[in-house]
Length: 209
Image 1 (cartoon, rainbow, N blue to C red):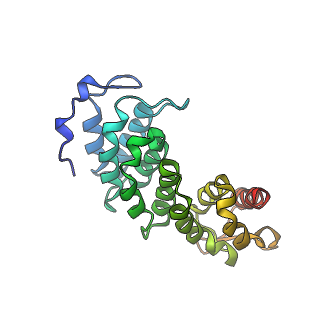
Image 2: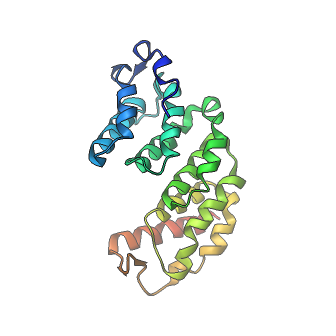
């Protein structure tokens, strides 16, 4: 997984807080247990490589291939957090587009969260709505039966941003806001806040269609 990692001149690259010489160690820590330490390393990478204002540092392009290798492995403890980082680094544009095939494979993951975030990243990188819509539709389809999973909220929001390309989602979810019952989650009743959040997201999707 780390082939080529030590060949990058990390010390000569910059992240948001200076030299990127600490990036290789953080990448390796993402693959190790305990899980809380892996999550801490992934959070550090997000802070170092991506700025909230949208500026992406020079160390981000060479880090992206290794981040994609991490999310391709189901045994990585912080896989979802790393995938969130990949999604925001999709703004790397032409450089990130070179990894579109790997993102496409991740959209077929059996893990719904991985599939949703990969679809978002793929769409951001390539603008290919056809490839991204299908996994997002698959993720939100259980809403029509009153079942909710956490990955559905970002899926609905991503579909909304796609506009007309996601009209099939509007057709699929048109009756969801009219449901009287609360959405089922984890065998019990879902919390009021999250229930309202997904309903509002669906309303926005329908309004945008």
